[in-house]
Image 1 (cartoon, rainbow, N blue to C red):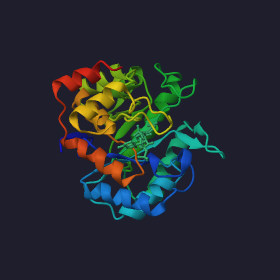
Image 2: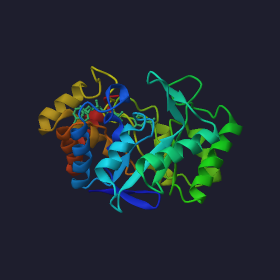
Image 3: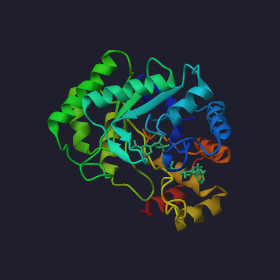
Image 4: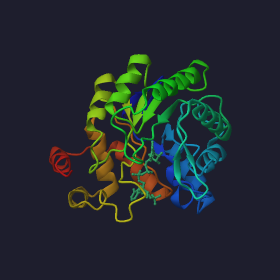
Length: 292
Ligand SMILES: NC(=O)c1ccc[n+]([C@@H]2O[C@H](COP(=O)([O-])OP(=O)(O)OC[C@H]3O[C@@H](n4cnc5c(N)ncnc54)[C@H](OP(=O)(O)O)[C@@H]3O)[C@@H](O)[C@H]2O)c1
């Protein structure tokens, strides 16, 4: 499998996202606990060495499943989490952005995963307009304080590297003036490429870019990415599934892209992991490049 650096680690370009493991709406226990455990164990058997999680997936559920399935962790497994949010009583995704919130969430992640240190933790920014990534830093003083909290956690050895998530180019530029950033995690897929300037900057700076919603997410029932005509047509032509076409295309976008497709299904896990070996021909890549 091709690799790229993730801070002090070198990881395979196809990893695993744990967001689909908890129950519906990423809230509460999984529909099938034993299958969730089996998916995690199979991911390691398939050679996956990068798992993305968050204490707010569940909350606590994804982390506890990872601990139950995989602890003690293989030395080469890069566990990456995120801080910056919390869940409401009905599962709402709410900001928790003060430096003290970040520290508390980091400690909760370490406790639920039962580890002393994480390979990286993303500061997940919530803008005032809700879901969309803020293009500008809305509160410079807060952002500086957040970065200080992350730097302190790294200096104390609780995290190996600092990541940023749901950001604009300006956030990354300001952060890089202060410290090393090892990964950036924004929404990006065949039909959602608004993070392209950010992706380009990470490529230029040799920082891992980890797209979330690479398959179009689990939140849209009629998934327009997997059902896109070009994806379906190329899949038929090459004898691959739509998910494989989409993921293989995402790997062609830049060498620093690390995939973390999310699934609760063993069959989908096998399918997604196999894309590490798929090389798309120029005709397919051109057709998909034009799909957005
Ligand atoms: N930083 C952030 O703010 C943020 C936000 C969202 C996500 N993330 C991370 O990014 C990861 C990926 O995003 P995501 O899980 O939300 O969305 P995604 O990977 O784009 O899509 C997940 C959806 O695709 C389905 N799926 C997976 N493999 C498939 C296949 N081979 N064929 C057909 N359907 C398939 C899953 O259902 P099944 O379970 O049935 O396979 C699920 O409904 C997450 O797991 C999480 O770690 C980060």
